[in-house]
Amino acid sequence: MAAAPSPVALITGASSGIGAAFARHLAERGHECALAARRADQLTTLADAIAAAGHKRPHVIALDLAARDGPARLAGELAARGLEPAIVVNNAGFGLRGPAADLDRTEQLAMIDLNVRTLTALSLMFVDCLKRHGGGLINVASLSAFFPGPGMAVYFAGKAYVRSFSEALAHELASQAVRVTCVCPGPLPTEFQARAGLHDQSQLLLTRSAEQIAREGYDAFMRGQHVVVPGIPDKIAGALPRFMPRALVLSAVGRFLKRAGPPIA
Image 1 (cartoon, one colour):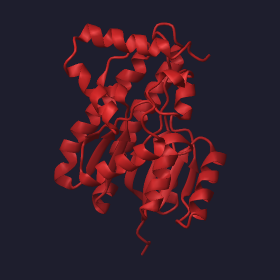
Image 2: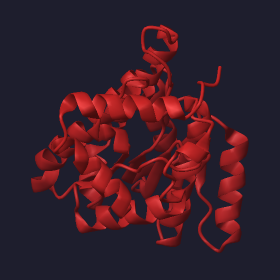
Image 3: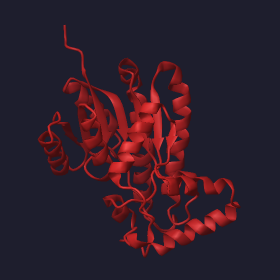
């Protein structure tokens, strides 16, 4: 009889930023981890550092999750190694800044593929595994999930989807003892900011580190909390759209994004 698959915490977008912080924190909490991202060298460096800290060395899976077959290839790679997820941290994603009509449409559709389609696929394809292990999903959205985003329209809309989808899925899976937590961090200094064209970070309210986001997100997941906005300032910011006229919210977000400096080409 074949051995049962080993449960792991799967973290996508694990090569840097919030994903790497989740990998370190989950390893510290005793989880065996599988790290997935495009950059094998950075994943290997992170896995080596986690092992050097006295934790079990994570499995490294280098692949492009934005590809149409990315989620299926990831599932196949896990199965080939005798692994199955008990926790999935959907962190892979990127942003683009500028008027939607001016940005490259192919790049914007690729952003939707990774931020929305891939996250949805990975949230649904492992539900049976999550049930077996009493685990669940940690979907990383953004504070932008609470706002319309003129200047980053497609990105903001995608994060609003992640929040709405995660809340609904949490309700659907609650009776099956599968937890779903959507983490909505505000701006923080990671590689994501440069990819999104937000290079003037002096204009950003960097209220939390990636390590704090990972810790607060994991703690919320363990409590069974459906949505968490780490940090008091960001909690207040996320609540403001409920009390402000929509036109004022649009104007304020548009001005904020413009102050971040010209988009990086």
